[in-house]
Amino acid sequence: MWQPHSAEAFAAALGGVFFLLLFALGVRQLLKQRRPSGFPPGPSGLPFIGNIYSLAASAELPHVYMKKQSQVYGEIFSLDLGGISAVVLNGYDVVKECLVHQSEIFADRPCLPLFMKMTKMGGLLNSRYGQGWIDHRKLAVNSFRCFGYGQKSFESKILEETKFFIDAVETYNGSPFDLKQLVTNAVSNITNLVIFGERFTYEDTDFQHMIELFSENVELAASATVFLYNAFPWIGILPFGKHQQLFRNAAVVYDFLSRLIEKASINRKPQLPQHFVDAYLDEMERSKNDPSSTFSKENLIFSVGELIIAGTETTTNVLRWAILFMALYPNIQGQVQKEIDLIIGPSGKPSWDDKCKMPYTEAVLHEVLRFCNIVPLGIFHATSEDAVVRGYSIPKGTTVITNLYSVHFDEKYWRDPEIFYPERFLDSSGYFAKKEALIPFSLGRRHCLGEQLARMEMFLFFTTLLQRFHLHFPHELVPNLKPRLGMTLQPQPYLICAERR
Image (tube, rainbow, N blue to C red; front, side):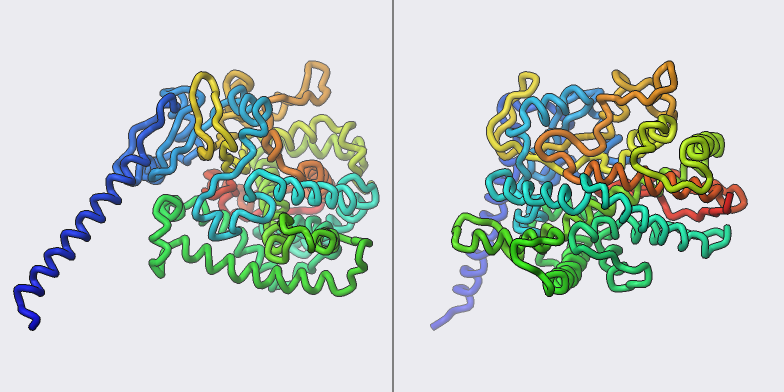
């Protein structure tokens, strides 16, 4: 017969087991937080959460905090992200040493719980380094060449989109408005032409909602809650938190993308691709009997989503920052417009060929890329095998953070980096001077595959806008210049007046 003291003994035993389990988990976590032999030094962290608290509690943005830590521990140092050992690369020299001189070793992606949950380490941007990634990257590069940059006819499609954009701006008749949505719609349509072979109207609320969810997830992915989720994925059982909002957004986006892909493939002619979706489906068909192939409907959805957000978020924010700085510095805006009037004329059609004849405009866009650091920490890398950098041992599978902000504010390469100064990209004769230490699209095997298309978009949208309009803030009220923190740095919402010149 069951006795009361037996129940008490059972409860005590159960409590003892639970305590031992917690103790074992605690010891395991603390052991994970020990730096391996020869590992780069770094700031000490708290038990269990490591340096996550320091990053979240710092009055400075994470990339600024990391640059300052490099002044204490060196250009290569380590952080403990709740038991996840991360190495941070600061300054152009060490970033180049790793991403270029040891490109294959540093081409992997970390198996973080967030990436596992979002894309199962598939797709294009977050996939592990290997044959699957190589195949997907090759297909994407070829698609951008065939359906986008590299085709002279595609320039006319970008210019056609700039006309839609300019017409939309004109409807405000010089009154204040927030141009974020217009710029986002216009820029995303360029990527849409490559992926789906069509654009979406500015009145398409379903597509706009998808882009808004994408943009929200870019911010959520850099939150302290998501860092904690990566360190302790068991918190995923909690029904609340920013990580849950991120997952809900992703589910809505993936469902919408699935429908877009299905629509884009309706008129598909096998082996005669008209856009990226067609080309991907052709690859799926060709490799359907290959058990090692990673081409699948699921990876197609992931790849399309990554291409849209990569092609939209960065270029959109470059243009928004550029417009903000033109209103902030009317003398710089005037010099750009003077060059536009001289080379293109007040009513001529801008051309990509004009770029080489417009050094000041080119210098301004490059200074925006440097100064604003759209993707300050890049996308996290990982080592595919053991590496040695500057005498430090970095084990296989280590998360690697490239602090591109530290590269673009590296005093060794930039004089007075905290000053917005386009002339730094001009030589003594006034010609454009390319700078080695400007790497907004990163370096190595994982560098942005849409770089050339993005540069064409920036130039054509920027010159077309400034050819037509004088930009200024309403009532000369300067907006908050502190960026909004996320995986990308975007301006705080601001109003602009665009008056016909």
